[in-house]
Length: 157
Image (cartoon, rainbow, N blue to C red; front, side):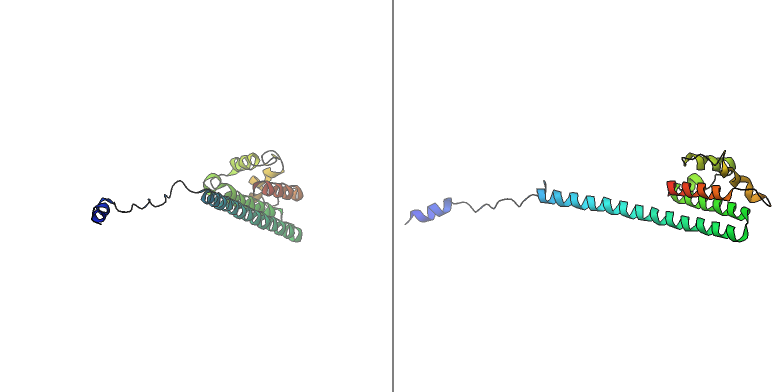
């Protein structure tokens, strides 16, 4: 029995294993991270497209209101001013204030042509947007200008 205390003295303390490492992550965590990332990207695009759709619908309603106003009072000048203002607001919303706000005259029309597939602003019906606001009774093809503006809004919003 005397050997028991000497045998106990030779024993060492119990060594616990190290705690589990946080890195590398288990496959389940990688799957959860990928799922959350995909959800965040989908939410971003859903919100972005929803905003653009709302802008497009609002601009379409404003263009219809301008056309209805023209049909009521036959003021082509007011229609041209309204279309130009609507296109400028839409361009600022879609392309940024710093790129659009300073554009006037031919530069503004070239910008509209650059962003459109129709290219009818500088040399077509859209050229009236430069002069019509300053004329007393401008001669404008209102239907063609309205359609050109609708097409530009559809492409850029």
